[in-house]
Image 1: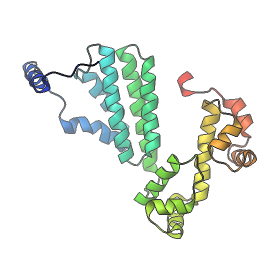
Image 2: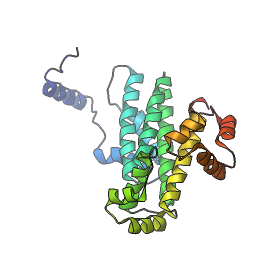
Image 3: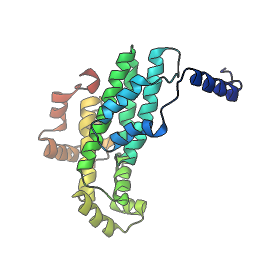
Image 4: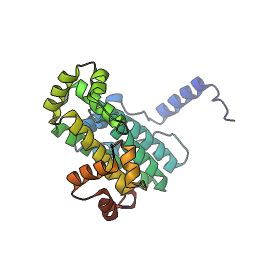
Length: 250
């Protein structure tokens, strides 16, 4: 059983004393937050700024240097995720990006490996945010609808459900959604389901029938029809051409 940390106040006070003796202090809050604000705004300089902060950090979270750097990256990934969501990235995408890069830390055996992976993560987040800024700015209600859709792609999503979720009338929400996104609600939902289906065909072992069922298409034939309309081939043909081209193996 893990032992309780003894006299935490005393240990923190000792750490403060030792750090002062070594002329070491943590980054000033505003300086540390700069990298996250830059990423949130899609500023390409965020990657180098965050990398600099990681390299120069004297924070000690573990005795082993590689483990210490991994812990720092997890902290960074957590804050990157929160700032990205605050900047308008849908929460499910933000969390999945963070999970992907944290999961791949298992392949890092050196400090440089972790720094390289961290660099890729910040670069990916920043590009996502830059692309987001190019798109239209959506109202709070539409952002909430988009988040709801992302979290419920495995169900039948109705306009009435969305309207109730954001406390608007169905007719008003329908007009607002079309105005801001350029899509009718039903078309947007279908497009997002097809996007997810495409990734499942590439990166999972689920059958075409299972994918159609998981994403709540009315039938496999309807799924095939709509998928072919968007990707110019059937799901089965697409799987045969693209299966296993996974980012982790590229």
